[in-house]
Image (spheres, rainbow, N blue to C red):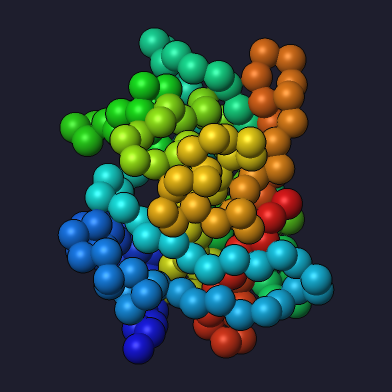
Length: 208
């Protein structure tokens, strides 16, 4: 049976760690503990279900749109997209929180390296500067993300990269969560849109 949780922004940043830790320990809880469920919406968008947060989420990430810091290595990538309602209207001030591994597949659990959240602008847009994550043992390349419209539940999901050999063997990989990626001078650019249902208080994701 699906549990629905309504959270404020403070609760989102302060309590999500406990949920992600539980999901990491009990794989069978994934279906029971999704914070927001799927609903068809917003035209003919290609929807996909939320995914588990994994064991490395940390609350209270710094507010920043760029995760690039001195000393960070790896292929740079800019990820952009829009957070929309089920009626395809942009959602301003939606909270978008990213965390990921570095290019060696390691997470910073002591600090907030390659972690950060931002709020969408008046057109519902977000823009993230980061690096392509490395391979974590047993997983393909992926970005973690929590998305929350004002006064709505949290959408927790993961974004993947096209053409990765490990996509076929990753046990939770979903092709509907693959970023649209293009090569760019000195790096890559990618897009992904999130569609949130504010009437049914459920969330879904759409590939950009």
